[in-house]
Image (cartoon, rainbow, N blue to C red):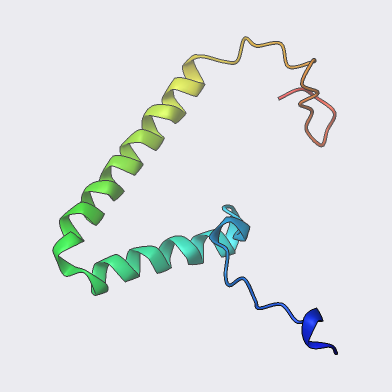
Length: 86
């Protein structure tokens, strides 16, 4: 290979880690682990962020249950696997 063809590796890219599934869970747990053991002074922030995240998720789930979507999604073609609009 010619030296001009070799490019340095750009390094890891957090944007390429899928947010859903096992890779996202591993990434989230790794970030929590890093702040919990790497910066012990941030432990109250980690706990507070976890509690706030759980509370926000509960509010969003309750909001979605009481306020179904009224937006016409035909123009966006937002169809699930079963062919129904979401």
